[in-house]
Image 1 (cartoon, rainbow, N blue to C red):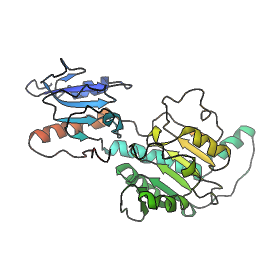
Image 2 (image 1 turned 60 degrees about the vertical axis):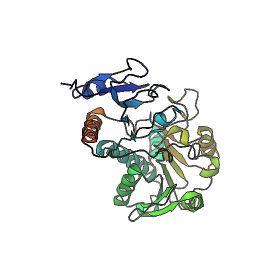
Image 3 (image 1 turned 30 degrees about the horizontal axis):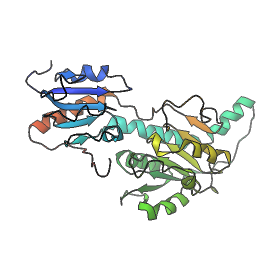
Image 4 (image 1 turned 30 degrees about the vertical axis):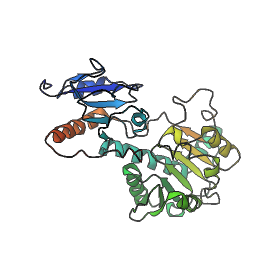
Length: 316
C-alpha cells in the first residue's frame, strides 16, 4: 500500500515501458505520470528516463531525481533542471549484466567466433591458430563501476587488462592511463577495445576513425577489435564502417549506435564482421532497481546522505 502522507513520485519515461516501474513504486508511495500543474507541490521525487524538457523545472518541493538507467546524459540534456541531487543507478544486477556482455563478446572475438560461424555456413572444417588469453590485451575506456567490474572478470579469465579514464584512477592489476596524454599509449597497447564511458560533452564522438587507427593491429588476434556497450553517441558509426572496410578494425561488437533503433539502411546491420545487439547489454530491471531507489528516499528523509550522486560538472 502506498503511503498518502509521503510526497508523490513523478514517473516520467519516454521510449520505455513505465508500467513495471509504476507498479513497484506505487506499492510504497503514490506515483503520478505527470504533474497536476507545472508547479505541483505534491511531488518530492522524480524517477525518469528521457523526461520531457522543462518538466521538472518548477516543481517547488522536488528533493531528488533518480535515473532508471546507468547513464544520466538523458537527464542532463535538459538545461532547465532544478538544483537538486541526481542519483544514478548502481546495482549488482545491472553490473553483472554488463560484465556478462563484455566477457561474452571478448571471448567470442578471442576464440574466433565470427570466423567459425562463417565457416559453418560454408561447411568448412578448419582450425585457425589460437592464442592464449594472456597474449591479448583488453583495453577498457571508462573505469567507473561497470568498467572496474568488467576488468576484474577479464583478469580472472586470464586477459591482460588496460584501463583509460578522463581523470586518474587506480585499479588492482590493471595498467591504467588517464587524460589526453594517456590516450595514445593506452590505445597503442590495446588489442580489444571495450568502451564503457559516460556520455559527456568531452566524450561525444570520441570513438572515431583517428582513435581506431591507434589500436594495435599486429597482435594475436590478427587485428584490432572494438566493443561498444556504453552510449551510442560516443562513436561515429560511419567511421567504424570505414575502419572495418580498410582493415583498421578486424571486427566489432556494437550494442549502441548514434541513432537508435539502428536504421535499416545502416551498413552495420549486414557487415560480415559486425555483431549487433539492440542496446541490451545491461537492461535496467525494475524488480532489482526500485527497491534501492525507495530505500534511498526513506534514508534521505531520515537525514542520511544520498549515494551514487552525479557530478553535474563532470557529467556523470
